[in-house]
Length: 314
Image 1 (cartoon, one colour):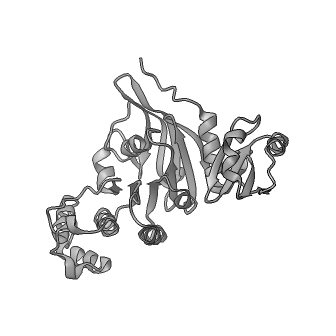
Image 2: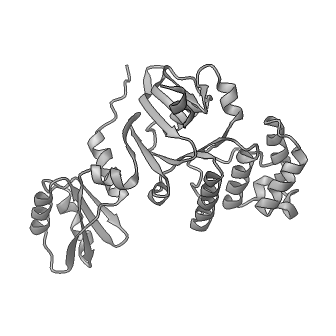
Image 3: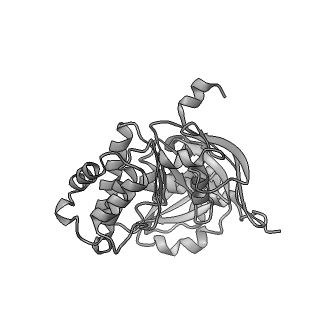
C-alpha cells in the first residue's frame, strides 16, 4: 500500500487470526477504516468483536495477519498504539472505591497528560461533575458512570476511540446523549469504532462491519447492506398476528419471522414464495403490506445464512 493511502487510514489490518488453544476466535479479518469516521462493529455474542478490537489496539497479539493502527505496526508498536488510543470496555472498569477526581487523575498520570490538574478540572466541568468530584465513582448511576468512562478515555485526546458495547444497561436518554458526544468528537477529527447490539446505534454510523463465527459477513453503509441482502419483507398488523408465527416459520421461502412491537415481519429472498406463505396463512383480522427491510431484518437473515459456528475445535 502506498504511503499516501495508508496515511488516510486509521485502521488497516489484513488476515487477522486469533487462536486460543485449539479454538479459532477470529478468522482472517480485513478492515480498512479511514480516519475521522464512525464505524459500527456488530455481531452476536462470541462472534469475535472484542477479540478483534483488542488485536487492533495492541492489547492482544494476533496469531496471524498484519497491519497498522494509526500508522503504527500492530505487532511491533503496540505501546505507541495504546498511548494514541482510547479504549472503553463494556463493563465499567474504573475504581468504584476512588472518587471521581481520583479516577480521572489516575488515568491522566497513566497517559502522562500535560497540565494534569488543569485537564482534570476541565473534564470535571465539561461533565458537570465539579460539585461531585469527591464522590465515590461507585455511587454514580449507570448513565453517569458511562459519561465518566468516556471522559477518562478521551482526556488524553486520542486519535482513535474504541468502544466495546458502551451503552449496554443505560437508559435511552443517556444513550442518545452519549451518541451526541461521539459525533461531536468525530467532527473534531477523532476516529471511532464502536461495538454495539443496538440497530438504532448502528444506523448512526458512517459504515458498519458485521461479524459472525469469527468472520466478516458484510460491511458497508447501512442502505447498501440492506439492499445487498436481497431481502423482501412483509409486515403484518392486527389482532391475530401472534397466532401466525408457528405456521409462517415453516413455510417455504420464509427465512425469518420476527416481532417489531405489535407487528410481525416475515422476510426472504423470494417474493413469490413469501406471498404464497401469506396466502396460506390468511386471516381476516390481519392486514399485510410490503415494507422496506430494516437493518435488523438484514442481520437476522445474514446470521441465518452464515449457519452454525464452524470454528475449529480440534
